[in-house]
Image (tube, rainbow, N blue to C red):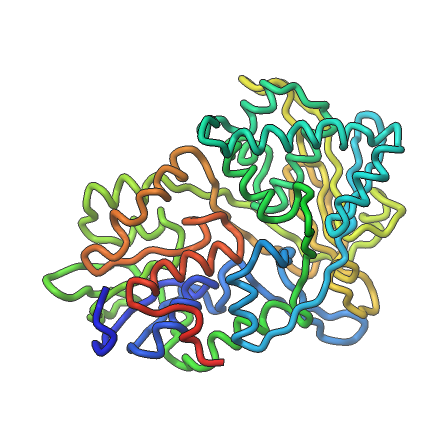
Length: 433
Protein backbone atom coordinates (compact mmCIF):
# COMPACT_ATOMS: atom_id res chain seq x y z
CA UNK A 1 0.00 0.00 0.00
CA UNK A 2 1.26 3.49 -0.84
CA UNK A 3 1.17 6.58 1.42
CA UNK A 4 -1.94 8.67 0.74
CA UNK A 5 0.23 11.76 0.13
CA UNK A 6 2.05 10.14 -2.82
CA UNK A 7 0.69 11.21 -6.22
CA UNK A 8 1.20 8.47 -8.81
CA UNK A 9 0.84 8.13 -12.56
CA UNK A 10 -1.41 5.11 -13.13
CA UNK A 11 -2.38 3.50 -16.44
CA UNK A 12 -5.64 1.53 -16.58
CA UNK A 13 -6.10 -0.86 -19.49
CA UNK A 14 -9.79 -1.44 -20.23
CA UNK A 15 -12.79 0.87 -19.82
CA UNK A 16 -15.41 -1.63 -18.67
CA UNK A 17 -17.10 -1.29 -15.31
CA UNK A 18 -13.98 -2.45 -13.42
CA UNK A 19 -11.59 -0.15 -15.25
CA UNK A 20 -13.86 2.89 -14.99
CA UNK A 21 -14.54 2.26 -11.29
CA UNK A 22 -10.81 1.99 -10.55
CA UNK A 23 -10.11 5.12 -12.60
CA UNK A 24 -12.83 7.18 -10.95
CA UNK A 25 -11.77 6.19 -7.41
CA UNK A 26 -8.02 6.63 -7.96
CA UNK A 27 -8.61 9.92 -9.77
CA UNK A 28 -9.15 11.61 -6.41
CA UNK A 29 -5.48 11.31 -5.40
CA UNK A 30 -3.60 10.25 -8.52
CA UNK A 31 -3.11 10.98 -12.22
CA UNK A 32 -4.91 8.29 -14.23
CA UNK A 33 -4.96 7.43 -17.93
CA UNK A 34 -7.41 4.86 -19.33
CA UNK A 35 -6.54 2.90 -22.49
CA UNK A 36 -9.55 1.35 -24.29
CA UNK A 37 -9.05 -0.61 -27.52
CA UNK A 38 -12.62 -0.12 -28.80
CA UNK A 39 -14.24 3.19 -29.67
CA UNK A 40 -16.76 2.84 -26.85
CA UNK A 41 -16.53 2.55 -23.08
CA UNK A 42 -18.41 -0.03 -21.04
CA UNK A 43 -16.99 -3.39 -22.08
CA UNK A 44 -19.88 -5.86 -21.99
CA UNK A 45 -22.26 -3.12 -20.82
CA UNK A 46 -23.07 -1.72 -24.23
CA UNK A 47 -25.89 0.56 -25.33
CA UNK A 48 -26.79 0.92 -29.00
CA UNK A 49 -29.13 3.28 -30.84
CA UNK A 50 -31.91 1.85 -33.04
CA UNK A 51 -34.67 3.39 -35.13
CA UNK A 52 -38.07 2.50 -33.67
CA UNK A 53 -41.32 4.06 -34.82
CA UNK A 54 -39.47 7.03 -36.32
CA UNK A 55 -37.52 7.69 -33.10
CA UNK A 56 -33.97 6.92 -32.01
CA UNK A 57 -34.09 4.57 -29.01
CA UNK A 58 -31.27 3.54 -26.64
CA UNK A 59 -31.22 -0.23 -26.09
CA UNK A 60 -28.86 -2.24 -23.88
CA UNK A 61 -27.06 -4.96 -25.80
CA UNK A 62 -27.58 -7.81 -23.39
CA UNK A 63 -29.92 -8.06 -20.44
CA UNK A 64 -28.52 -5.76 -17.73
CA UNK A 65 -30.42 -6.39 -14.48
CA UNK A 66 -29.35 -6.03 -10.87
CA UNK A 67 -30.65 -7.98 -7.87
CA UNK A 68 -31.19 -5.73 -4.85
CA UNK A 69 -29.63 -7.98 -2.21
CA UNK A 70 -26.98 -9.51 -4.50
CA UNK A 71 -25.43 -6.29 -5.82
CA UNK A 72 -24.66 -4.20 -2.69
CA UNK A 73 -21.46 -2.56 -3.96
CA UNK A 74 -22.80 -1.94 -7.45
CA UNK A 75 -25.97 -0.36 -6.09
CA UNK A 76 -23.87 1.72 -3.69
CA UNK A 77 -21.90 2.91 -6.72
CA UNK A 78 -25.13 3.91 -8.48
CA UNK A 79 -26.23 5.87 -5.41
CA UNK A 80 -22.89 7.70 -5.32
CA UNK A 81 -23.40 8.61 -8.96
CA UNK A 82 -27.06 9.58 -8.49
CA UNK A 83 -28.37 6.92 -10.91
CA UNK A 84 -31.89 5.57 -10.18
CA UNK A 85 -33.13 2.02 -10.81
CA UNK A 86 -36.59 0.55 -11.27
CA UNK A 87 -38.09 -2.92 -10.93
CA UNK A 88 -37.84 -5.14 -14.00
CA UNK A 89 -40.52 -7.45 -15.31
CA UNK A 90 -39.04 -10.93 -14.93
CA UNK A 91 -41.53 -13.42 -16.35
CA UNK A 92 -39.88 -16.45 -17.94
CA UNK A 93 -41.32 -19.06 -20.30
CA UNK A 94 -39.47 -22.26 -21.18
CA UNK A 95 -40.61 -24.51 -24.01
CA UNK A 96 -39.52 -28.15 -23.92
CA UNK A 97 -39.50 -29.09 -27.60
CA UNK A 98 -39.69 -32.88 -27.33
CA UNK A 99 -43.02 -32.91 -25.47
CA UNK A 100 -44.24 -29.38 -26.39
CA UNK A 101 -44.76 -28.45 -22.76
CA UNK A 102 -44.46 -24.87 -21.55
CA UNK A 103 -43.38 -23.79 -18.08
CA UNK A 104 -43.79 -20.34 -16.54
CA UNK A 105 -41.87 -18.60 -13.76
CA UNK A 106 -41.53 -15.16 -12.21
CA UNK A 107 -37.98 -14.50 -11.02
CA UNK A 108 -39.17 -11.61 -8.87
CA UNK A 109 -41.74 -13.82 -7.09
CA UNK A 110 -40.10 -17.25 -6.53
CA UNK A 111 -42.33 -18.23 -3.61
CA UNK A 112 -45.40 -17.51 -5.73
CA UNK A 113 -43.94 -19.71 -8.46
CA UNK A 114 -43.30 -22.47 -5.89
CA UNK A 115 -46.90 -22.28 -4.64
CA UNK A 116 -48.35 -22.40 -8.15
CA UNK A 117 -46.07 -25.28 -9.12
CA UNK A 118 -47.25 -27.38 -6.17
CA UNK A 119 -50.76 -27.41 -7.65
CA UNK A 120 -49.68 -27.97 -11.25
CA UNK A 121 -49.21 -31.58 -12.34
CA UNK A 122 -46.95 -30.52 -15.23
CA UNK A 123 -44.75 -28.26 -13.09
CA UNK A 124 -44.52 -30.17 -9.83
CA UNK A 125 -40.98 -31.19 -10.77
CA UNK A 126 -39.96 -27.59 -10.01
CA UNK A 127 -40.76 -28.05 -6.32
CA UNK A 128 -39.47 -31.61 -5.99
CA UNK A 129 -36.18 -31.14 -7.81
CA UNK A 130 -35.80 -27.52 -6.74
CA UNK A 131 -35.76 -28.30 -3.03
CA UNK A 132 -33.43 -31.26 -3.61
CA UNK A 133 -31.04 -28.95 -5.43
CA UNK A 134 -31.43 -26.43 -2.58
CA UNK A 135 -30.22 -29.05 -0.09
CA UNK A 136 -27.36 -30.09 -2.37
CA UNK A 137 -26.36 -26.44 -2.81
CA UNK A 138 -26.06 -25.92 0.95
CA UNK A 139 -24.14 -29.19 1.28
CA UNK A 140 -21.66 -28.14 -1.43
CA UNK A 141 -20.87 -24.97 0.54
CA UNK A 142 -20.33 -26.75 3.85
CA UNK A 143 -16.80 -27.50 5.13
CA UNK A 144 -17.32 -31.13 4.11
CA UNK A 145 -18.58 -30.23 0.64
CA UNK A 146 -16.66 -31.16 -2.50
CA UNK A 147 -15.75 -27.87 -4.19
CA UNK A 148 -14.39 -29.60 -7.32
CA UNK A 149 -17.64 -31.21 -8.53
CA UNK A 150 -18.94 -29.59 -11.72
CA UNK A 151 -22.58 -29.06 -12.67
CA UNK A 152 -22.33 -31.79 -15.33
CA UNK A 153 -20.96 -34.24 -12.75
CA UNK A 154 -23.62 -33.19 -10.24
CA UNK A 155 -26.38 -33.75 -12.80
CA UNK A 156 -25.04 -37.22 -13.58
CA UNK A 157 -24.88 -38.14 -9.90
CA UNK A 158 -28.22 -36.76 -8.69
CA UNK A 159 -30.45 -37.84 -11.61
CA UNK A 160 -32.75 -34.82 -11.64
CA UNK A 161 -35.64 -34.75 -14.08
CA UNK A 162 -34.67 -33.65 -17.58
CA UNK A 163 -36.93 -30.61 -17.27
CA UNK A 164 -35.15 -29.38 -14.14
CA UNK A 165 -31.75 -29.88 -15.76
CA UNK A 166 -32.93 -27.78 -18.69
CA UNK A 167 -34.28 -25.09 -16.35
CA UNK A 168 -31.12 -24.84 -14.26
CA UNK A 169 -28.93 -24.89 -17.37
CA UNK A 170 -30.94 -22.01 -18.81
CA UNK A 171 -30.63 -19.95 -15.62
CA UNK A 172 -26.85 -20.52 -15.48
CA UNK A 173 -26.48 -19.90 -19.21
CA UNK A 174 -28.40 -16.63 -18.88
CA UNK A 175 -26.38 -15.34 -15.91
CA UNK A 176 -22.97 -16.04 -17.43
CA UNK A 177 -23.96 -16.12 -21.15
CA UNK A 178 -22.58 -19.61 -21.65
CA UNK A 179 -23.61 -22.49 -23.87
CA UNK A 180 -24.35 -25.95 -22.50
CA UNK A 181 -20.68 -26.97 -22.49
CA UNK A 182 -19.72 -23.87 -20.50
CA UNK A 183 -22.56 -24.48 -18.04
CA UNK A 184 -21.47 -28.08 -17.51
CA UNK A 185 -17.95 -26.95 -16.52
CA UNK A 186 -19.19 -24.59 -13.79
CA UNK A 187 -18.22 -25.88 -10.32
CA UNK A 188 -21.27 -26.76 -8.25
CA UNK A 189 -20.12 -24.74 -5.20
CA UNK A 190 -19.61 -21.65 -7.39
CA UNK A 191 -23.11 -22.02 -8.86
CA UNK A 192 -24.67 -22.63 -5.43
CA UNK A 193 -23.10 -19.52 -3.92
CA UNK A 194 -24.04 -17.39 -6.94
CA UNK A 195 -27.66 -18.57 -7.07
CA UNK A 196 -28.11 -17.89 -3.37
CA UNK A 197 -26.62 -14.41 -3.77
CA UNK A 198 -28.83 -13.66 -6.78
CA UNK A 199 -32.09 -14.89 -5.28
CA UNK A 200 -32.64 -17.90 -7.52
CA UNK A 201 -32.86 -20.09 -4.43
CA UNK A 202 -35.87 -18.82 -2.44
CA UNK A 203 -35.09 -17.02 0.79
CA UNK A 204 -36.60 -14.58 3.28
CA UNK A 205 -36.58 -11.70 2.68
CA UNK A 206 -36.44 -11.85 -1.11
CA UNK A 207 -35.03 -9.02 -3.20
CA UNK A 208 -36.10 -7.76 -6.62
CA UNK A 209 -34.43 -7.54 -10.00
CA UNK A 210 -33.98 -3.96 -11.23
CA UNK A 211 -32.66 -2.21 -14.31
CA UNK A 212 -31.48 1.32 -15.05
CA UNK A 213 -34.20 3.29 -16.85
CA UNK A 214 -32.80 4.84 -20.00
CA UNK A 215 -30.01 2.23 -20.41
CA UNK A 216 -26.72 1.45 -18.66
CA UNK A 217 -25.13 4.27 -20.61
CA UNK A 218 -26.32 6.58 -17.84
CA UNK A 219 -24.03 5.15 -15.18
CA UNK A 220 -21.13 4.67 -17.61
CA UNK A 221 -21.28 8.31 -18.63
CA UNK A 222 -21.57 9.40 -14.99
CA UNK A 223 -18.46 7.38 -14.16
CA UNK A 224 -16.48 8.58 -17.16
CA UNK A 225 -17.47 12.25 -17.48
CA UNK A 226 -15.04 13.70 -14.85
CA UNK A 227 -12.16 11.80 -16.47
CA UNK A 228 -12.59 13.62 -19.79
CA UNK A 229 -9.82 13.06 -22.33
CA UNK A 230 -7.85 10.93 -19.89
CA UNK A 231 -9.96 8.09 -21.33
CA UNK A 232 -8.44 7.19 -24.70
CA UNK A 233 -10.79 5.13 -26.91
CA UNK A 234 -9.20 3.37 -29.86
CA UNK A 235 -5.93 2.85 -27.96
CA UNK A 236 -4.67 -0.67 -28.49
CA UNK A 237 -2.01 -1.71 -25.99
CA UNK A 238 0.57 -3.96 -27.61
CA UNK A 239 3.00 -4.47 -24.74
CA UNK A 240 3.66 -3.58 -21.11
CA UNK A 241 7.30 -3.51 -19.94
CA UNK A 242 8.61 -3.31 -16.39
CA UNK A 243 11.95 -1.64 -15.82
CA UNK A 244 13.24 -0.69 -12.40
CA UNK A 245 10.70 1.52 -10.64
CA UNK A 246 8.49 2.26 -13.69
CA UNK A 247 6.19 0.51 -16.15
CA UNK A 248 6.07 1.40 -19.85
CA UNK A 249 2.89 1.03 -21.88
CA UNK A 250 3.29 0.61 -25.65
CA UNK A 251 0.05 1.59 -27.45
CA UNK A 252 -0.67 2.59 -31.05
CA UNK A 253 3.02 2.81 -31.87
CA UNK A 254 3.88 5.12 -28.94
CA UNK A 255 5.13 4.53 -25.41
CA UNK A 256 4.45 6.17 -22.04
CA UNK A 257 5.89 5.57 -18.60
CA UNK A 258 3.77 5.10 -15.47
CA UNK A 259 4.27 4.19 -11.82
CA UNK A 260 1.62 1.46 -11.90
CA UNK A 261 -0.55 -0.35 -14.48
CA UNK A 262 -4.00 -1.82 -13.79
CA UNK A 263 -5.24 -4.54 -16.17
CA UNK A 264 -9.05 -4.32 -16.23
CA UNK A 265 -9.38 -6.78 -19.11
CA UNK A 266 -9.71 -10.59 -19.29
CA UNK A 267 -6.80 -12.25 -17.51
CA UNK A 268 -5.61 -14.27 -20.50
CA UNK A 269 -5.58 -11.08 -22.62
CA UNK A 270 -3.47 -9.35 -19.95
CA UNK A 271 -0.96 -12.21 -20.09
CA UNK A 272 -0.46 -11.63 -23.82
CA UNK A 273 0.48 -7.98 -23.17
CA UNK A 274 2.98 -8.48 -20.36
CA UNK A 275 6.58 -8.59 -21.53
CA UNK A 276 8.53 -11.26 -19.64
CA UNK A 277 5.75 -12.45 -17.29
CA UNK A 278 6.83 -14.22 -14.13
CA UNK A 279 6.13 -17.91 -13.66
CA UNK A 280 3.31 -17.07 -11.25
CA UNK A 281 1.75 -14.61 -13.70
CA UNK A 282 1.89 -17.20 -16.49
CA UNK A 283 0.32 -19.90 -14.32
CA UNK A 284 -2.43 -17.76 -12.83
CA UNK A 285 -3.40 -15.61 -15.81
CA UNK A 286 -3.12 -18.58 -18.18
CA UNK A 287 -5.74 -20.52 -16.20
CA UNK A 288 -8.54 -18.24 -17.42
CA UNK A 289 -10.51 -18.68 -20.63
CA UNK A 290 -13.56 -17.22 -22.36
CA UNK A 291 -16.41 -18.22 -24.65
CA UNK A 292 -17.51 -16.27 -27.72
CA UNK A 293 -21.12 -15.75 -28.76
CA UNK A 294 -23.38 -13.37 -30.65
CA UNK A 295 -26.44 -11.36 -29.58
CA UNK A 296 -28.78 -10.03 -32.26
CA UNK A 297 -30.93 -6.95 -31.65
CA UNK A 298 -34.04 -7.63 -33.72
CA UNK A 299 -37.54 -6.41 -34.39
CA UNK A 300 -38.63 -9.68 -36.05
CA UNK A 301 -41.95 -10.14 -34.26
CA UNK A 302 -42.98 -12.91 -36.68
CA UNK A 303 -40.01 -15.03 -35.60
CA UNK A 304 -40.92 -14.49 -31.94
CA UNK A 305 -44.55 -15.48 -32.52
CA UNK A 306 -43.45 -18.77 -34.05
CA UNK A 307 -42.26 -19.73 -30.56
CA UNK A 308 -44.69 -18.11 -28.12
CA UNK A 309 -48.16 -16.66 -28.21
CA UNK A 310 -47.71 -15.14 -24.77
CA UNK A 311 -45.89 -12.04 -23.61
CA UNK A 312 -42.95 -13.24 -21.48
CA UNK A 313 -40.06 -10.94 -20.67
CA UNK A 314 -37.69 -13.87 -21.32
CA UNK A 315 -38.08 -17.06 -23.33
CA UNK A 316 -36.05 -20.20 -24.05
CA UNK A 317 -36.73 -23.28 -26.17
CA UNK A 318 -34.63 -26.36 -25.46
CA UNK A 319 -34.17 -29.79 -26.97
CA UNK A 320 -32.46 -33.04 -26.03
CA UNK A 321 -30.24 -33.74 -29.00
CA UNK A 322 -27.40 -36.15 -28.39
CA UNK A 323 -25.40 -38.25 -26.01
CA UNK A 324 -22.41 -36.37 -24.66
CA UNK A 325 -19.17 -38.28 -24.20
CA UNK A 326 -19.25 -38.47 -20.41
CA UNK A 327 -22.30 -36.99 -18.74
CA UNK A 328 -25.41 -38.44 -20.38
CA UNK A 329 -27.82 -36.32 -22.35
CA UNK A 330 -26.82 -32.88 -23.54
CA UNK A 331 -29.36 -30.10 -23.83
CA UNK A 332 -29.26 -27.72 -26.74
CA UNK A 333 -30.76 -24.24 -26.46
CA UNK A 334 -32.57 -23.85 -29.76
CA UNK A 335 -33.94 -20.34 -29.18
CA UNK A 336 -33.50 -17.70 -26.49
CA UNK A 337 -34.65 -14.10 -26.43
CA UNK A 338 -35.66 -11.24 -24.15
CA UNK A 339 -38.41 -8.70 -24.86
CA UNK A 340 -36.74 -5.38 -24.05
CA UNK A 341 -40.08 -3.53 -24.01
CA UNK A 342 -41.34 -5.89 -21.33
CA UNK A 343 -38.17 -6.36 -19.35
CA UNK A 344 -37.28 -2.68 -19.07
CA UNK A 345 -40.81 -1.27 -19.35
CA UNK A 346 -39.98 0.80 -22.43
CA UNK A 347 -42.81 2.67 -24.24
CA UNK A 348 -41.67 1.60 -27.72
CA UNK A 349 -43.81 1.82 -30.84
CA UNK A 350 -42.88 -1.74 -31.88
CA UNK A 351 -41.18 -4.49 -29.86
CA UNK A 352 -37.40 -4.89 -29.76
CA UNK A 353 -35.84 -8.20 -28.77
CA UNK A 354 -32.43 -9.47 -27.73
CA UNK A 355 -32.03 -12.72 -29.66
CA UNK A 356 -29.31 -15.12 -28.48
CA UNK A 357 -27.75 -16.61 -31.58
CA UNK A 358 -27.32 -20.35 -30.99
CA UNK A 359 -25.81 -22.66 -33.66
CA UNK A 360 -29.18 -23.95 -34.89
CA UNK A 361 -31.08 -20.65 -34.54
CA UNK A 362 -33.42 -19.93 -37.47
CA UNK A 363 -32.63 -16.87 -39.65
CA UNK A 364 -34.22 -13.52 -38.77
CA UNK A 365 -35.81 -11.15 -41.27
CA UNK A 366 -35.29 -7.90 -39.34
CA UNK A 367 -31.98 -7.29 -37.59
CA UNK A 368 -30.89 -3.99 -36.08
CA UNK A 369 -27.42 -5.12 -35.07
CA UNK A 370 -25.26 -8.21 -34.48
CA UNK A 371 -22.99 -7.84 -31.47
CA UNK A 372 -20.14 -10.26 -30.72
CA UNK A 373 -19.32 -10.93 -27.08
CA UNK A 374 -16.63 -12.86 -25.27
CA UNK A 375 -17.53 -13.81 -21.70
CA UNK A 376 -15.41 -15.49 -19.00
CA UNK A 377 -15.74 -19.19 -18.30
CA UNK A 378 -15.61 -20.36 -14.69
CA UNK A 379 -13.89 -23.70 -14.27
CA UNK A 380 -12.00 -25.55 -11.55
CA UNK A 381 -8.71 -24.13 -12.79
CA UNK A 382 -9.94 -20.53 -13.12
CA UNK A 383 -11.44 -20.55 -9.60
CA UNK A 384 -8.16 -21.91 -8.23
CA UNK A 385 -6.41 -19.06 -10.06
CA UNK A 386 -8.83 -16.52 -8.53
CA UNK A 387 -7.71 -17.64 -5.07
CA UNK A 388 -4.11 -16.79 -6.05
CA UNK A 389 -4.94 -13.21 -7.11
CA UNK A 390 -2.90 -11.77 -4.22
CA UNK A 391 0.22 -13.53 -5.49
CA UNK A 392 0.44 -11.28 -8.57
CA UNK A 393 -1.83 -8.25 -8.10
CA UNK A 394 0.00 -5.36 -6.47
CA UNK A 395 3.33 -7.09 -7.02
CA UNK A 396 5.93 -5.39 -9.19
CA UNK A 397 3.59 -2.46 -10.05
CA UNK A 398 0.97 -4.53 -11.88
CA UNK A 399 -2.64 -4.93 -10.70
CA UNK A 400 -5.49 -7.08 -12.05
CA UNK A 401 -9.27 -6.74 -11.92
CA UNK A 402 -12.41 -7.53 -13.91
CA UNK A 403 -15.58 -9.55 -13.37
CA UNK A 404 -13.73 -12.74 -14.39
CA UNK A 405 -11.77 -12.49 -11.13
CA UNK A 406 -15.00 -12.83 -9.10
CA UNK A 407 -18.42 -14.04 -10.29
CA UNK A 408 -18.77 -12.56 -13.78
CA UNK A 409 -21.55 -10.03 -13.10
CA UNK A 410 -21.67 -6.25 -12.57
CA UNK A 411 -21.31 -6.68 -8.82
CA UNK A 412 -18.21 -8.79 -9.37
CA UNK A 413 -16.75 -6.10 -11.60
CA UNK A 414 -17.09 -3.52 -8.83
CA UNK A 415 -15.77 -5.89 -6.15
CA UNK A 416 -12.67 -6.71 -8.19
CA UNK A 417 -12.09 -2.99 -8.80
CA UNK A 418 -12.26 -2.36 -5.04
CA UNK A 419 -9.68 -5.10 -4.47
CA UNK A 420 -7.30 -2.96 -6.53
CA UNK A 421 -8.19 0.45 -5.10
CA UNK A 422 -7.85 -0.94 -1.56
CA UNK A 423 -4.13 -1.39 -2.28
CA UNK A 424 -3.97 2.39 -2.83
CA UNK A 425 -5.97 3.08 0.34
CA UNK A 426 -9.18 4.19 -1.44
CA UNK A 427 -12.73 2.84 -1.75
CA UNK A 428 -16.20 3.62 -3.17
CA UNK A 429 -16.81 6.46 -0.76
CA UNK A 430 -13.88 8.29 -2.34
CA UNK A 431 -15.95 8.84 -5.49
CA UNK A 432 -17.31 12.35 -5.30
CA UNK A 433 -21.09 12.31 -5.69
